Length: 83
Image (cartoon, rainbow, N blue to C red; front, top):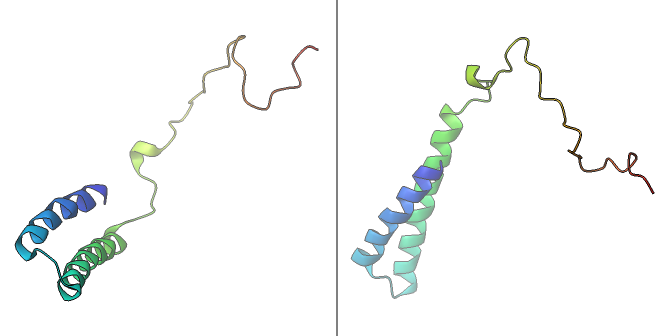
């Protein structure tokens, strides 16, 4: 979606040059054109996007996270501090 938005931004520059909006009606045309492009992108995303977990994002069987080293400290671990 980010790439689509970026491409829309660059295409909008060509529209500004060709339309040269000066009156409110011309600005309205540019606004509705940009809004239409964004809505089309959102509709495309809504139709084809999925919330299904992808194979590359699954945690492998037998995975053991790295253990903390003696010098590392996590946020909120104030109990181990010496006063």
